[in-house]
Figure (cartoon, rainbow, N blue to C red):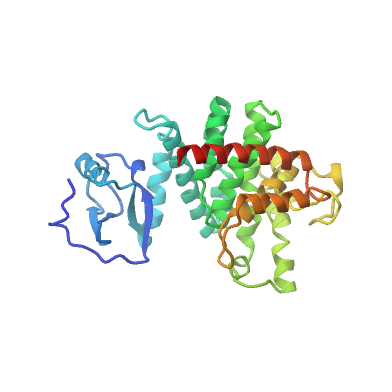
Length: 335
């Protein structure tokens, strides 16, 4: 049970990271301390490091309406280790609805990719974690694409490289499915390419990536290196397919030849990279940045439609608009 009276409150600090309550299973000893947030904003211990997490404690926080618990940032890597082990069992849980399973899988993947990005560990992005996420996304889309479309609104709109990579992987898979791709292996490759598309940013100066103001010419030139850096990281890996490499290398190319890094024209750009360009642009526009608020769907779509006149694939833009219109209808129905 939640023992708010006996537990000593710890003041809410910026050093606490919210984590989904439903990822935790009772009966396991934790290597990190887990905290809950009370109505008065105070943080209190739920389970100390080295203790076994109890069912009573989890149920107590659920009865209070909690959906997240908290981990100290100093122990965040230990939580990510726990999340990686818990990841495999999420979709097999019978006690969770499909939407909640997707949300947990998404949040867990974001956390795992976050850890890889913050430590600049390409291996952790390109290896087993990618395959686990790809399998889950493809299974969900092939079983019920309409349901996954409805889950797009659950994606985070705070722009970080790691959330953007995961968002693009989901949305580009949906677009590929809407374009008629039904082969699970092909959908998996496209999903994986979406996850990897910005991996080259792991080698870009974080000050450049997170700069609040306008980039200098030198900073912009550095940022434009990320597709080539991503290709360099991945081209020798046997588990990364050629289609994924093209998505990484070509997603900033434009049909009129004005893109980078090679200035390719039209059909020289792979269809999968053209899909990625549409989704990459949409997600970047509709996510909140340090220097501007998130754009509305309508504003972002107006920019995509303008770009589709000569720079990005107009049929893909049209189909993405149709997907998002259905998503927004579902959102209104839930209000």
